Length: 361
Image 1 (cartoon, one colour):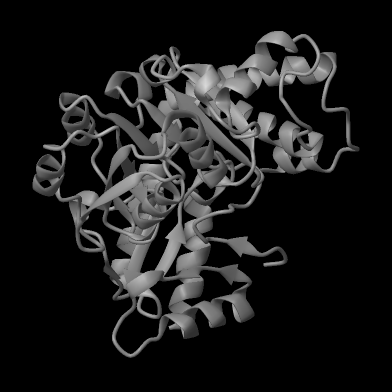
Image 2: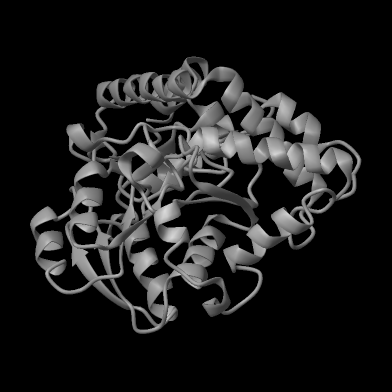
C-alpha cells in the first residue's frame, strides 16, 4: 500500500474529489462564488443535522471550538450543568464547562458501559441550566442513547447540549425530532472533510433563551456569526477569514454526503461496523462496549491474550502503512480504537485491514 491508511478515530482519508478541491490554488474568502458555496454549506449542514429549523454554523476551528461557541453564547458563570460522563470526552465536556465558571456536576458511570439514567434523574432534582452529553463516546466505542436523556432534561426545564463529534452523518441523529437544543461536531470524522471546521447546530429553544447583548466575547459568540451572515451575507458571510481551500474541501465533502443520501450513508456505516466487529471477533479481539451499545463509527477492542496493543499498532504502521489508535485514560495500553467513519466505512478498506491485522498477529 503506497499511501497510509488512516483507521484512527479521525481524521479519515479524504475522498479524491475532496482532495482535488484542497489542491486548487487559494481563492478569496468572500465574493460571489464564496457566498454561493457558503449558502450551500448552510443547507447541507441542516440536511446532515436533520435540522431544518435550527441555526447552523461552520465555525473555523477544531471540534471543541463548537463546544466553546455554545458555552460562550448560552451559559453563564454560576449556571448549573449536569454532565453525563462515561468516558474521556464526557469528562472533557465537564472541563470546558468548568472553565466557563459553570457549576458542572457529574453523573459518572464506568467506561465501556452506558449512562447512569437513575443518577441523572436524581441530579436533575436540583435546578439545572443544561445537561451535557456525548452521543458517541470515542474513547470506548459506546453509542449512548439520546431519546431518554433529552426527555429527562426537558422534563426538568434543562437544555441539552450534545457532543456529536463522531456521530454526525454516521449515526442516526434527528436533531429536530429528538428536540436537541445545541450540538457540535467536527469536519474530519463521519463527514470525511479536512480537519478544521466545527459544525454547530442551535435549536430555536436555545437561541431565543439568550439576549444577544448579554453575550461576552466575539469570535465564539454565535450572535456575531449570525449578524455577519445577515448583514454581510451578500459578499462576506463569516466574521473572519476561513481558509478557502479548507472551506471548499468541506463544501465538497458535504455535497458527497447529500449525493449519497443520509439514510444510505448511515446504513453503510452500520454494515461496515458489523463487518469489522465480526472480523475482529474471529481474530480473538473483545469489544469494550456491550453489544447493544457498540458504536458503528468507532470500535474499541482489547486484543487476544499475549498481544500488546502498542506492538500491534507498531507492526501495522511499519509493515502495512496502516494507522490505528490506542486507548485513552484507564484503557491506555489495553485497547485499540478503529474508525469506521466516512471513507473508512467501506468493505474493501476493512478487508485490507483485517488481512493485515491477521498477519500482524
